[in-house]
Amino acid sequence: MNSVNLEGTLKVFHAAREAGARRVVFASSTAVYGNSEELPKRETMTGEPVSPYAAAKYGGEIYARIYSSLYGLPVVCLRYFNVFGPRQDPTSEYAAAIPKFISRMLQAKRPVIFGDGRQTRDFVFVEDVARANLLAADSNATGVTVNVATGERYSLNNLVAILVELLGSDLQPVYEAARPGEVRDSQADISLAKRTIGYLPQVSLRQGLERTTAWFKRRMKDEEKQEEG
Image (cartoon, rainbow, N blue to C red; front, side):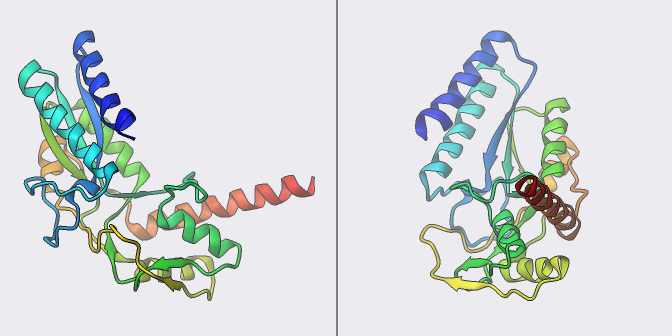
């Protein structure tokens, strides 16, 4: 992980500097905030990574600042919160909660929640994230790190309740032991992103879930047709 996420990032910055790149947009993560209980998460907070992945992302941000200040390379770091949308792989080792929940529920299986379900997340639709990347690339911002989220938080229990309604299901979640190292609550302050790159989320959680569940339904039908044919 370190050789890809940290050393790989450093190589990208070096190559961008050598090539005279106009701007670099670095994909960071909300994971750098760690288990701090302060909400909402602001970019001025000290990073407290609690996993190797988070540490690598935080290290990438530090390299970004160094390359911006020392070499004049324009770099913008985007801290993605909980990104979701169509085409997420529910079977991946790193799969997010939403594709896993939808996939299981479409198979008439109860979604699995680790913990009591009252932990909260700031879910952001993939199109908003893509828009943030384009805005950052076209902006004049440099040496800055901004949150990419909605500024709102929902519990996993809230999330499942919306999915139950959208899927016309009566499946209730199965609760298992909380996993070590997981953040309890997450919510972003997105005011800096608004000021520096003009970012404003345009897709609500419910709208995003409607589009995501519709995609998963179509994929399931396509797979059933392939099996039949």
